[in-house]
Amino acid sequence: MYAIVDIETTGGHANANGITEIAICIHNGKKVVERYSTLINPHRHIPIYISALTGISNEMVQDAPPFEEVAHDVYHLLNGKIFVAHNVNFDHSFVRYHLAAAGYDLQCNKLCTVRLGRKILPGLPSYSLGKLCRHLGIDNESRHRAAGDAEATAKLFSLLLQSDTQNHIPLALKQNSKEQLLPPNLSKQNVEALPLSPGVYYFHDQKGKVIYVGKAKNLKKRVCSHFTGNNPGPQRQEFLRNIFQITYQLCGTELIAFVLEAVEIKRLWPKYNRSLKRFEHAYSLYAFEDQRGYLRLALDKHRKMTGAIYSCNSLLEGRDVLMHLIEGFALCPKLCFIQNNTDPCTGINKEICACEGVESPQDYNIKVNAAINELNEALPTFAIRDAGRTDDEHSCLLIEKGKFYGMGYISHYFDANNLDQLKNYLTPYPGNDYIKNMVANYVVKYPERKMVFG
Image (cartoon, rainbow, N blue to C red; front, side, top):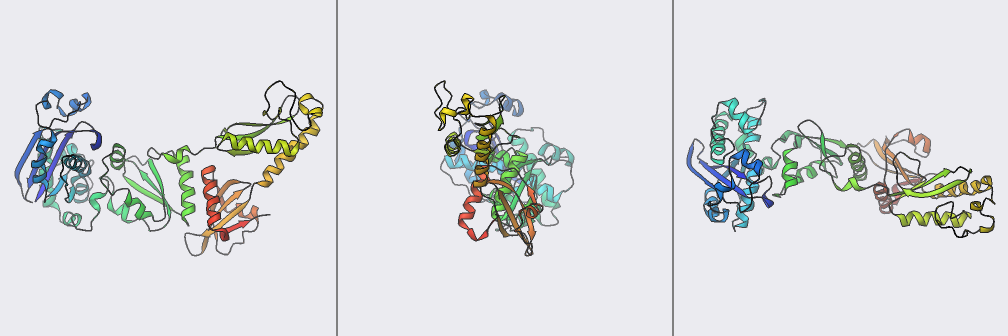
C-alpha cells in the first residue's frame, strides 16, 4: 500500500515552520481507496506570500486542530505504507519532524514522483507537479492546496505504475536502494559514475553554475554522505533541491584534494561553501621608497595584487617579524612605523639614525635589502612528492620561500632536483595560510616525502 502525501506549510524548513494543511491518499497500487485531509493550526503566523500562494490564511486555521491532535491519525495512516510525494524529501522531512515532536517515530520507505517521472517518462520539458500534470492531461482544480495536489499526485502515480515497463519503482524500493535519498533533480547514474578515489567534487545548479565544492579521500562515499540523514534545516533542504549535476577532478592524494578545494572555493566562491571563504592573510609586510630615497618597511592590512614581502594572520606575528629585522640589522623603528611619536629615536644607532638624516639613504637601504634577503632566505623552499592519479605518475606540490607556489603531476621517472625545471611541470595557484599550514603539518607527518632545494 502507498500513502500519497501533500502538505502546505508556513515556510521551507521543518524545524522552524509549521504545517497548515495535510492530505493523504491511500493507494492500493491500482486506485485510491481512502482519503484524509485537514487544515492544521501551525501556532505561528502564515506569511503573506504563503497565503497568496496557497489561499490559506491565518483566519482559516485559527480554529483548526494543532498537529499534535491529528498526529495519531496521520501516523496510523502512514505507518507500514510506502510514503509517496512529489519531491518526497520535503514532505517527509516535515511530517517526520512534527510526528517526532508529538511522540511518534515514523519509519517507512519513500518514493519520489519527481525522480520516478524523470526515469519512467524521460524527455519532458519540466517535472514540476503543475507542468507535469498539464502535459499529461491530469486535472488539478486546487493547485497549491494539499487535497488537490495529493489527488493530482495520486493520478500521476497511477500513470507511472502503468508506464513502468523497466521496473524502476520496484528497483527504487529494494532494501539496499539509496535512490530515494538522492536530491530530486540529480540522476542516480551521475552518482554511480563517481570513482572511489581522492578528488574534488562540484555540485552544479540547474544552469550549470557551481554551488558547492568539496574534497574527498573517496569521492563516491563523501558525495553520498551529503544525502543521508533527515536534517530538516533550511540550508540543507534548499541545498539539496538545487543540485542538478556533479562533476569532479581526480587527485593523487588527499592533500592535493585539500589544497585544490581551498583554491577552487576562492576561485568560484560557491553559494553554499562557508568556512574556507574566510581564510585570508590579514596582514603583510611591505617595502617602499619614500620621497627622500629611504627604503621603508611597513606592516599593513593585506592587500590583494600587491608585492608583499611577508604575510601573516595576526598583527602580533607581523610585529614580531619586523622587530627581529629592526634589531638584527639596526634599522630605524621610526622609518619602520614601530615608533610613531615625536620622541627621540629608540633605535640601536639612534645617534646616527636615518630618521634624523644622519645616515644616508644609500647606506640605510643596504641594511634594509640585507634584512629582506635574510627574511626570504629564512623562508623554506621544498616540494612534496607523493602518489599520483595513476601508477606511472607522482603528484608534486611546491612551497617556494615559504609561500605556496603550485602543484601538478610529474612522471614516475622525472628527476625533480632542479627547481626551475620542476616549476615548468606545475600549475601556479594562489596560496594562503590555510594551505601553508596544511602542507607544513603534512611534512611533519610524512618527512620522507619532502624534497629540499638548496
